[in-house]
Image 1 (spheres, helix red, strand yellow):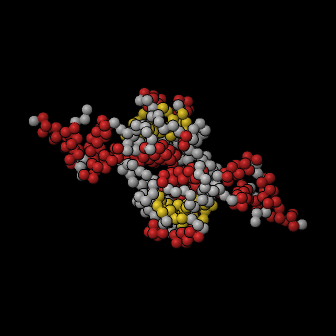
Image 2: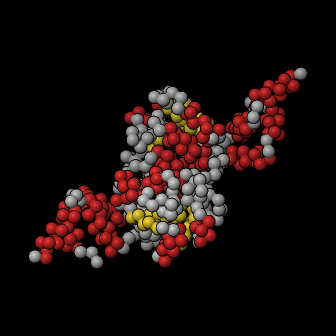
Image 3: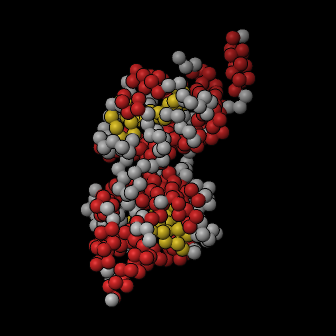
Length: 220
Length: 220
C-alpha cells in the first residue's frame, strides 16, 4: 500500500509544473505492451530502445543480460531510465517465463517471418515485444516459444533495420493504435500512485535524509 | 530517351533474380515524397536516413552540404546510395527553390510545432520532408519557408528523437498510408526505365568496358 500522506508530503516539495507533468505522462503510460531485448552488444542500442519506450509510453523494459553483467548500470546518465522500469533477467527462459506468467503473449519481431505485418497485428492482447540485434536476430529460444511474429513491411533492397529504428517504428505504431482503441491499456490507480511516489523520490535531492526525517517526526 | 536495346543487352547479363528484384523494388518506389536533410554533423545520421528512404521506397534524398563538402562521398561503402538518388545542394535556399519548382510543398518535421500530428498529415500532396538534427533542429530558413509542419506524437518526458529514428518513423507511416491510398504515387514508365538502366549499370562489373564494346560493335 502506498503511504498517501507521505506522497502528499513529497509532492508538496515538487513544483506545480513537475507534478502536472507526472500526472500527464502517467495517464499515457501502459503495461499493455512491454518490451524485451536480448543481450544487446552495443550499449547505445539499449539506451535507444529505452528512450523509445519512454517516448511512446511503455513503462517496462525487460533486459536479458546473459553475457553482459552490468551493462545497463553504465547507462544511468542517459535519463530515460528514471522514467522507465528496467527489469533484468539472467536468461531468456527466465524472461519468457516471467512474462508469460503475467499474461503476456510473446511476440518475436523479426524481418524473417511473414506471419504478421505490423499493420495487421492485433493490439487487443497484452503483448511482450522481443527485439533482437540486427546482426544476430532473436535467439532460437524466443523464436521457438513465440506466440506470434511481427514484421515491419519493407519494400527496398535492404531487408533489415537496426534495433533502435525497428523498436521505434513498432512502438510508435502499436501504441498510437492502442490509444485510439477501446482496449483498457492504462495503468491502474494503484500503479499510478506507485509511480507518483517513485518519481517524486527520483526527483528530490537528498531524498534519504528527507524520508528519514519525515518518518522520525511522524513516530514522535 | 532510354536506349531500349542497350537496356535489354545489359539486363541479359543480370541474373533472373536480380532483374525481378529490380522490377519489384521499382514498383514500390516513389517521388511523391522526397526527403531533405540539412547539414548533418554526424555522418552515420545521413546514412541512416538514406537507409530509411531505401527501405520505405523514397527514391530521392536531398542533402544540403553548406559546411561539409564531400561528406556523402565517404559513405559510399554503406550500400543504400546505390539505390537512392542523392541530390546535393550548396545552400538551403537552393534546395527549397529546386523542390518548390518541382511542385513539392515544404514540410518541416519538428517536435516544436503543434500544427499537424503525423496521423493527421494529408498525404495527397507531393511533399518534401525536411529533417534537422536533434541538437540544432531545422534552420530558420526552412521554418520560415515551410508550407506545413509535421510532428510525431510523443507522450513521455523526452521531447525529441534523433534524426534517424524520426525519419524512419515518419517515412514508414507516410509511405504505408500512401500505398493504401488512391494517390498516384508510383514512378512513371520513363522513370522506371531510367532506373532499370542505371541500376543495371551499377550492378555490372567492368561496365565501362562493356558499354564501350557494345557501342563500338553497333556502329560498325
